[in-house]
Length: 329
Image (cartoon, rainbow, N blue to C red; front, side, top):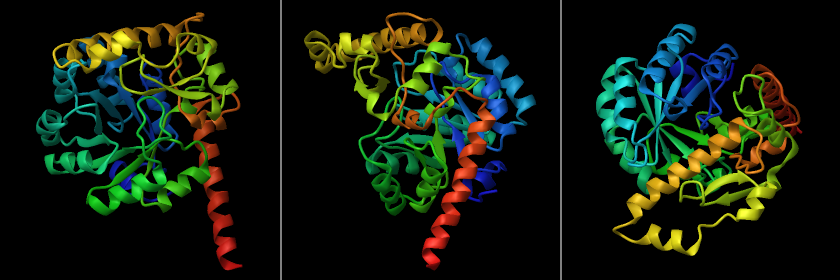
């Protein structure tokens, strides 16, 4: 066991969150995560209806003994947030990670139910805001994260948040090895959120082409694109992404900055982008937009989720022992 605030809070062996990944995570992955000694989180948007989300919450509560989390997109681009919040109030998970908006309503409704509220943050200003609202922990989304990444590397972001905030910090992004886990904990994180390496797992519900891309491509093949949601998002530089480019066109960019139009343009861009990601995730197509982060560098085959956890833990032990030996010499 590796003891931190995260492991003690959720009674897990290792301070690792299976990061919420749009369309990738499913109930089986969360069950396997918990059985492997870590804790999983799933985006509420991975379910098409509130009824499907509710059914999944009941299944996970039974199979994971309540030890799982749900990710909520809490800004206006998510038209389902109210219904999903209603479901989670009736079926409280162990924790909720809020993204892309204010967590105030989520905190107000779910904390009384015993739900821990974690908030994605990329800087001090927003971190202090959510801390004042009552967040239980910060998910420090660094520049190595997959999907909507931050701008600051973990070596700076985690100590910076530790210095200016009092609640626990969990590092999100760039970890795919045990040495990476050790490094994050040494910086002051209470755990890490790992996503991209788990795309290429047997339990993952995405297409074999997506999984194979995670194996075949590496860190140098990750680029930032604004075409999916209007906000920079890390994707694999496939031939199709090369063809369409990674920046919004002039009209999209102009409308996104127009005060009157930007809210509706952002919602439309988000909707179109998610549909493109959904198409690529589940079907082989020449129009492939695969979301991933640079930690795919450490993925060399498709394997069971538990094998990845065991490898990271084994590497952590080796890195820790090596560090101790060097300190003694």
